[in-house]
Amino acid sequence: KVDPVITLTKTANLNFGDVFAGASAGHVILSPKGTRTTTGGLLLGTLSPVSAAGFSVNGAANCTYAIVLPASIILTGPAGTMVVSTFTSTPAAAGLLGMTGQQQLDVGATLNVAANQADGDYSGTFAVTVAYN
Image 1 (cartoon, rainbow, N blue to C red):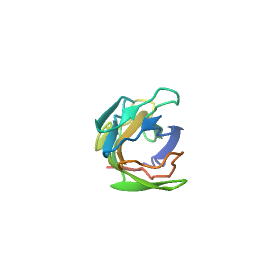
Image 2 (tube, rainbow, N blue to C red):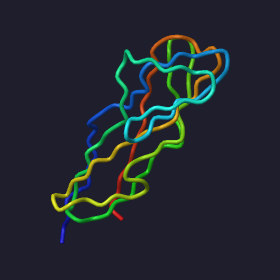
Image 3 (spheres, rainbow, N blue to C red):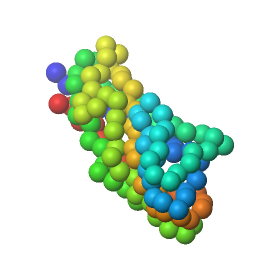
């Protein structure tokens, strides 16, 4: 039996929204469901959209697959960098394609913000890998 190649298609970007840095460092934790929480001296704004990364996984019906997330990435901005780490997903380490050979994969992460982080838009890319078990 020859099964279809498993594919991953991005449906939504990872977006931490507006973050206001303070005199102490902190973290913005974005869950795979798109919920934000903070630690340290950060405040969250509501002007920009917030979203977990979304992907459509497509392949052979009723097959399981492994999910590999990055350990960390670096975002670059106008006057510095920030690290994104602790990537999490729903489903977690493995998924199960449904009867149609499809499943939604959502990815969140933690944004590490330095004390007095420079203002500006920060961006970067990351890779998610899926493979049949």
